[in-house]
Image (cartoon, rainbow, N blue to C red; front, side, top):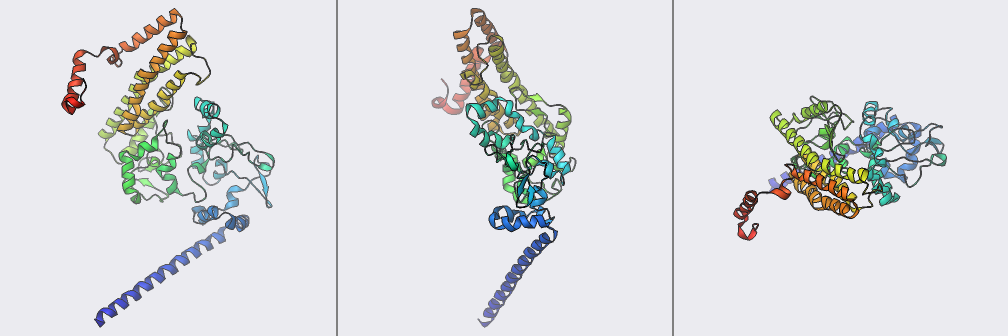
Length: 463
């Protein structure tokens, strides 16, 4: 009994020593980190911290733990401005700007800024001349544009007196923001202030902030794809904080969005230009292959090859390309040609966007349903390719869009226009991919019905 008592006391003593040692080490580590920061920090940045340390701990504390702090990159090193800068402002004896633009980041991260500036991300605010902009800014309203469209795409930021940014457009961290200094983009769209963590930027949900919803549900598609399932299961094994972060060396268990579109592999260099591996643009009504698409596809295949064999890779991209071709030929090209005929040739639909039902139907056919289908196919997501994608595209095309054309031509068209539409429609339904609508043979119909009866029984089968 006495022996057990001694053992218990010894165990408690050892545990206490370990605990105390760990506490001391943690405190020393914290002290040395602070000391290192203080040694490297400029007097200007120290002055910033004297006020903002107590005023905005949510800004300062993350920065204290950042790589910037460890390197002595403080507030002033990023926010300093020159007297002639458009958004320069006097602030407690210093000349600073609120916006830290890519031009500012370029002082240390020139390669990344060059790649970002040449990317589609940096051009994102160009959407302001599109139908999306008409919906967000005019049909819905300017406050929605500032909090909705502009927060992902970015927008111009007007500057008032003493470098004060105009409220309404500001605040904004849209990835294609047009900055007062003439640069494009916002690094903080992905690298959130003020920790600027590479692990956070590599998180799929960082991309999902904008790449979500009915018109581009990439994050929803990814999360329930095999890639997303693997990420959720093994994210603690992905070494996300690694500065190098090379697929095949630093991690292997699962890819994130960054892995495929930006990350480095043993064969491919990392990049901040998200378009260097994308062969198609799936954004417009009719999908198009991008310039130099063969090279871009080849680069993407090299990324895939870290985890997949070549027959699988080639097979997948054949499936994907065939799917996009199907969408284009069966739904996108016919519906676009019909809308152009209605608006430009016979002028039965006016040029005011979205003031007629058919314009909403056509827009949702390609912008929502058709895009969901294409994005689902691009990430090998069966339900998004089919039920959320081409099923809804087909339902719209056959049951909404074409009947709306019938109604418009019937009510507004001349006899000649009605005859033209009948010919166009006859030619459409004579095509192999549309024949089923009017010409499904009795044998084919009975084959479908028989299949359902065998599978579900008479109670659940078709009649």
